[in-house]
Image (cartoon, rainbow, N blue to C red; front, side):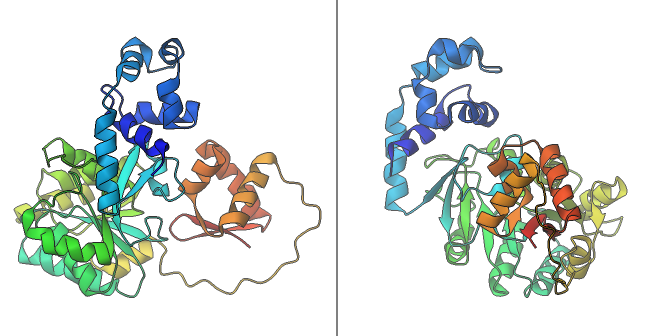
Length: 366
């Protein structure tokens, strides 16, 4: 482990510095270590930082906690993912409050081409269990990564059904990787590290306190292409996750239930208020996500010689040539352009037959 990680962990431990502030500082200074070495006066002049936060940075001296965490990471072969790392989940980068640092233990690709979140009540009915298992079984041939929160109820059903149907599945935790909550899911969690993984933004020794769960939910929503609410009441974390999904411009879906069923009140509410599209099965999801589309063999067209590209268009081409298939969130991150500038450049490249859009907000060179 490098000195960079010591400062990256420390950055997440500074009082009064949240993910939004940390990301702004990293954009300015390039890395975590430079933030700590910056002059207080310079820090104070940064928008949103000011005197209080600058003082918190300059007075921080709890590097022992960072060293302890590095020892824990090395012992249990955990992968730390800083916001500037190439393996950081690229979909999260388009979320304004994306975690500064993630801790990951598993085998699944966090930037898989198709990722769905499945969420729901901890107190599911047989209907919810049946629908959840059926949808995942129908997705078994689709090479989709399933994300949920490892809670009892629908989360657990989704993880278990994914393992059974040979789909990789990731559990996002509201605590450190030194424990599993609820404890009933310890065996399940171990299986998931071999066919998926466990992901968290919390350091070891962090307990599953109430305030951690909404933060966990934003990762569940942000890392996915689509959020599917299977069954939920009129209040609860699933509705928070669905709302976050909408705020992050994700596709949100809900399974309807009888109007008399309290566990379907939340899903029916989302559908009634146009906060989620109605789905009955996996095929509905695939159709609405355009994941059912069969790519026709491209007709090779001779490109016009000497096409003049704008600087933004050339930057998109360079990234796509280097990386192959690229998610739009990675294009935002790699190019450091605004979302509107990226969209405009991609549109012009598509019109010229240089770039093609694919399902799941992926792009490739033709």
